[in-house]
Image (tube, rainbow, N blue to C red; front, top):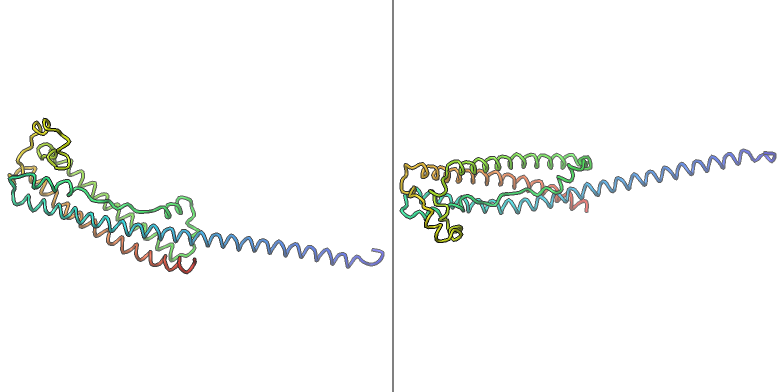
Length: 244
């Protein structure tokens, strides 16, 4: 102070403070950049994971549609043979089980469930893509609900009408060897297939009729779902390619 150095020390101190502040600001900015980069990377990762789920859905939809085609054809064959009135019931029974079964479509949802269950929906910053994703899964949920309701109603109808022993379910080729000779002799079915006015004949006819219709309805819903999945897939593919 005696040598009049106070001003110089004061300026030096101010300079040191400014350098520290600048350093802190730079560090904060770098940290923000890193966080933004991580969030951007995670956003892209989620989009690309959803893309993989969509690709799996498209493959599984095709498998389900092919299975429904086969089931529908079996139901139509059974219905045709039934209406021609058969003396040999096995002509009908061989197509009965295949007319009940098809490969059910199950959506692949690992990515969207991870996003929604972990509360990370805000990570998806692209509003157009986020809206398209949410719209797709909402539409898919609605379609799957319709498919499930139709399936449950038809399944319940089977249990409501059929008397399995009279029908001859134990004579289905897939199962009959499991009963053994004694049981096969003791279990007697009826010749319901010869009487178009019998309750069982009418119920089987109605069942096969509705099976053809419900299979067609399910295929239509799956085709709509596939079209929507392809549209979203194209959108996400362009994003993933440009951001990787």
